[in-house]
Amino acid sequence: MNKKDKKTLQGIKIRNFNYWMIVIACILYGFLIYETAQISIKYRVMTAATQKYIACEKNAALVHDGSDELTEQVRLYAVTMKPEYMEAYFKEANVTRSRDKAL
Image (spheres, helix red, strand yellow):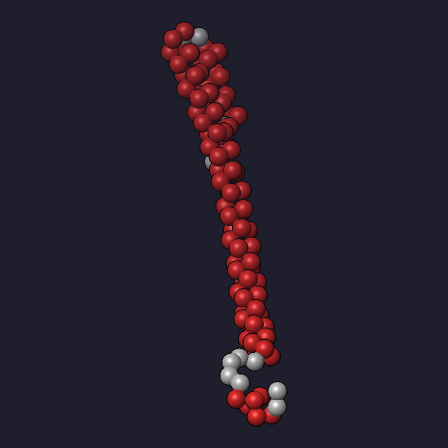
C-alpha cells in the first residue's frame, strides 16, 4: 500500500480499539470490586443477625423450660396436694429462677 491508500482507509484502528477495551475492563473491574465489598458488608451484617437470632432462640427455650417446670409443679400440687411439689414450685420461682435468668 502506498501513502495515498493509507489515508483513504476507513474503520477503527486497533490501537484505539485496545484503549477502549482497557477502559471498559477497568470500569468493570472497579464495579466488581465495589460489589464484592458490598457483599462482604452484607454478609457480616447477616452473620451478626444470625448470631443474635441463635442467642434469642436459646433464651426462648430457657424461658419455655422454666415455665414448663413451674406449670408442672403447680399441676402436680393441684392433683396430689403434696407439699413437696409446692416447695419445688417456690424453689424454682424464688431460688433457681431459670425463667428470669433467661430474660
